[in-house]
Length: 87
Image (cartoon, rainbow, N blue to C red; front, side):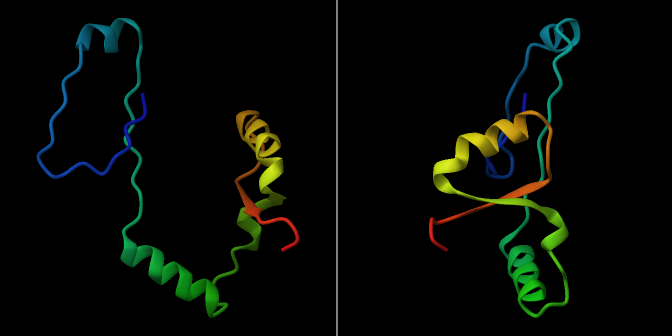
């Protein structure tokens, strides 16, 4: 189970711990970056101080989205750029 959402502080949820244990369910809550982090990364990339190209496995157009999702499902690649056709 992957938890997404950025819920307000103090939000609570409950789980059946027997199911977690006996069904071997893993709970994950990935961290996403703050707007300040994103702005800083954009600035560093824009200034050329960080080279993001090694992180982009491939560039595809939106009609190729299903192909990209299949690659990700197969565990291939790191990040894929989706660009408008003709860009």
